[in-house]
Length: 334
Ligand SMILES: *Cc1c(COP(=O)(O)O)cnc(C)c1O
Image (cartoon, rainbow, N blue to C red; front, top):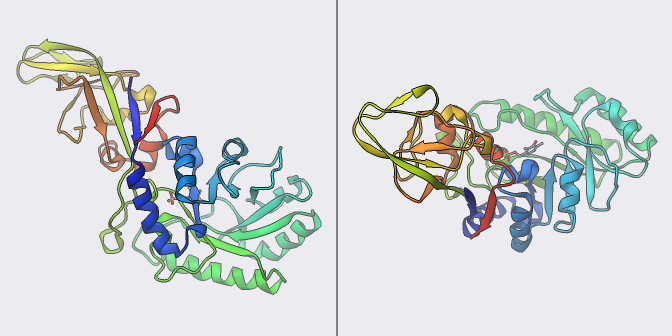
């Protein structure tokens, strides 16, 4: 069966570089949403705990409950509490949602500084603080999210300026000890001297961050590799076609093998007819639901060890390649 390996040494290497930037492990909040970017929630949580990471970020309460014993602090980005837990904080994404949180819930207020996706608007900050107090919620942090931290433009700077003003407003309202955070992976590495209370890092920890050349950071290593196993192989004569729709015609007599990894497992179908493995084995024809054919006779095939290469072929981003990997694929920590 197809399986995934996770390289712990590479993961710790990436965390070392991140901790160097945040100056302390305690300021790293590892983003584990979407099955830890497809790497496996419990597998990554286990490694992160061993490394000494104490903070995590997830999308929903179900994920938070699954890892509550691994971390001292978990931030839920997009969900409401049903089973409050001392370690779990919830995000206020909309001023109208404040009265949906039960009394005494620990919340973090998200402010929209330009992305216009989630968060309250800047001119609602004071009103939100009042509503949060009235509802009896415990406000622990105020945060924002960058829309273009991975692009070389002025965007990152003006969103930062907006967030600075928000910090002043919040402090002026009497919240002296509140924590502030705004950095995702790309944003963290654009700070010259990082001084916020926490960074929410996902893709960089998994070793697949992509930045323009001028702001590129080196040393990170992708931690996930995907292997598939041969189901069958056959000798094809020149002119034979492989797979659905007969979209690939072999140029000479050859051995073609079929492997147990298809789009149903997360192999993006747009890679069809357009992918070569790290060891230069060519994908032939269309990817099927549970199968893909390669010009190759190996019993086991390394499909990829750097999601960015697959992303290039599928005209997408490494995030999509990774989160597409189904949860049932076996994950092995090396
Ligand atoms: C997903 C997410 C992150 C992590 O982004 P990366 O680019 O993977 O570091 C951080 N903050 C929020 C709000 C997110 O949704």
